[in-house]
Image 1 (cartoon, rainbow, N blue to C red):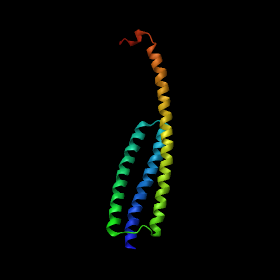
Image 2: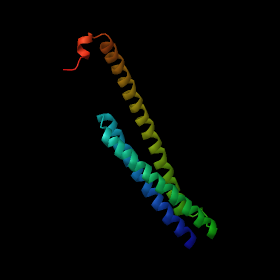
Image 3: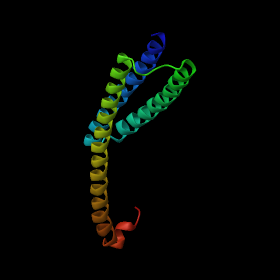
Image 4: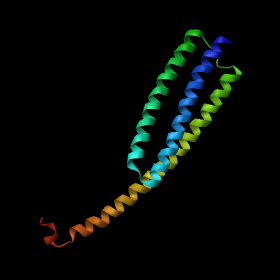
Length: 131
């Protein structure tokens, strides 16, 4: 049972990180909707840091389990794994929506740039002179 308790502790910490990543993905989505580039940059950086922490924690957990030949069949472990899987699915769905928003913003920016470049290419030369 002590083996499962250690695994539970690792999985609980991993789930906490996944929940934080999920919240950051939702914040990123809001920043995308508001075209808040600073907010987007900050949330993406925070997500990257959390995901690095998660990867390190998962490696530690796997090494711990291997060293103790821990069985992942305990009820609490399975329950935590299910919660983690559900959270990971949520993150995937949120990120798919975020990608759609990014693509829409990019398409809009390209359209505006196309309109502006036509205008700028057709303007009188006098507008190019600096005063």
